[in-house]
Image 1 (tube, helix red, strand yellow):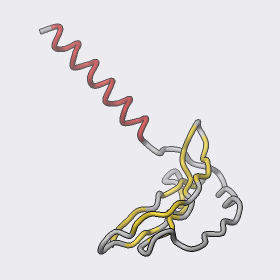
Image 2 (image 1 turned 30 degrees about the vertical axis):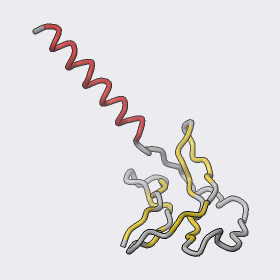
Image 3 (image 1 turned 135 degrees about the vertical axis):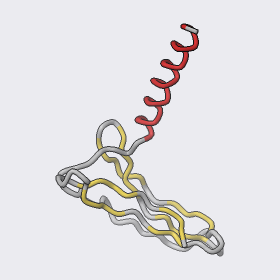
Image 4 (image 1 turned 90 degrees about the vertical axis):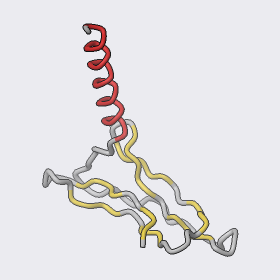
Length: 101
């Protein structure tokens, strides 16, 4: 029984750590500069959709991630990401882009 309790405690800690590692909990006091202008050009295939650059939380700060082309998804539209006020009321966090209707 003691082994089961220890095992369950270890599993709870592991799950908590993995959930926290996947959270995008960072926020900034001011919205960062958008980075360099990008010339998108022509899609490499007929149903190409440009997925504009995003911001990713890495190493305790936001980093700009360049855009890329994806194939269109039937019945869905790409909704680009945006900066939104952080729930704390001080600063902003990045709301990632997504496919949706």
